[in-house]
Length: 484
Ligand code: F0G
Image (cartoon, rainbow, N blue to C red; front, top):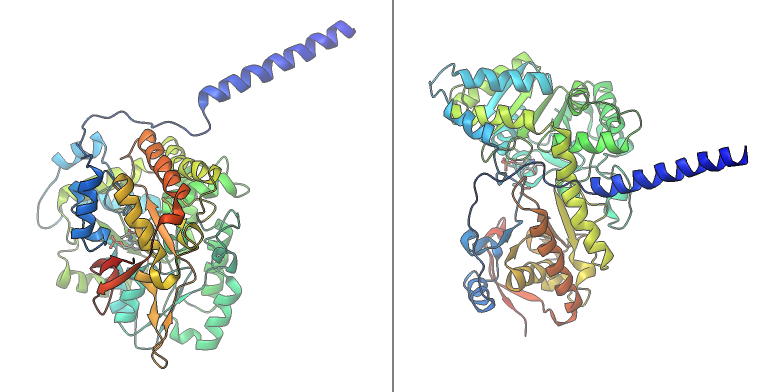
């Protein structure tokens, strides 16, 4: 009998051992679920060349020609690699002015995933925002969101509205690890509605994932609660859907009851609580250009369509070619693939894990599309007035040819109108946005290694001052110089 038990124990051990080996083979982070059919040459520049290019650019990485960059992590928007099927789809472009067959594919795909009645194509996300807000906003109207993306905020403010960020307080702590740091604060939402009056809130929004808050996901529970709260006051609910598939993947991984559900069903459920959405297809549409707005309200759809014809084009192309519409409809289906999403979100997480092991400070946990370095803690000796985020972007470029974007004082510091004093943002971040299906894991290792090298000699890095700046959106064109 004892022998029998031993044998069972032995078998169990053997089984565990085999499972461990298998797990080893499966790897913690899945490898690329594609092979490369076409390659694009990228330049390796010398240290001396990069010093010259960054100086010529006024120490602003937006002004460096892209051909002088080795790994470009400026944005994940419009930078995806399309699949062979998407390229084949482009050859099926029907460039008829009205009623192109590609529009019907586009419409059917969006109806399947998003479930809305009216589908309005636009050439990118901000045009959908422009159409929506120029139609629904009157001066003084308030639009709540977890965090508005810059273009969303700008389109609201340009039309006389007020954009309110109501993300939960935990999101501001860069070290706090929580599953859904993109969630909106439901109490804050209700108190805002009561303070300004529901008649002054034409819609409420949620951005999935929350780009301005570190690419953090929003839970299904929070989407449901937001919908319920807005609908209690008869306020329509819109979703900024740019990274909806990445958000659905996080729900599947992190929220009880979703582990066995296909991504398509999770996406369908997210949008079932909403009355409409705006979407930049340049993210989870896996294309280089495109977007749309989708909604159920017939009257609003009619008004938006009339405006669309004025500024973008006929309702079956909205500023896009037939071939673009086809690539989007194929991309929206491809992005639902779980093997892809596991690799995609895993690639971002893996970069974070390597940086964390070396003690590099970044916003935790990693988001769906980017790692946000915490420049304040990376370079604590550089005060906010000397742009630590810019110092880090300059160093990433000069050290290794990597381009990232500062999301800190150059982008967001404001002058107090009364005192003239500078108000600095809470966080100084440097976003490493990872284009979809573009860089291999070994290129990501290169990024991690070089950031760690910079971190090891961080005390030598100096701050910057502005030489020239535009009155608005200065970060795009500002020129700076290093402080002695
Ligand atoms: N909403 C979100 C959440 C975004 O991230 C973006 C673009 C837009 C709307 C606007 O879409 O560019 O197609 O007009 N984000 C890019 C970025 C630019 O780098 O994060 P668009």
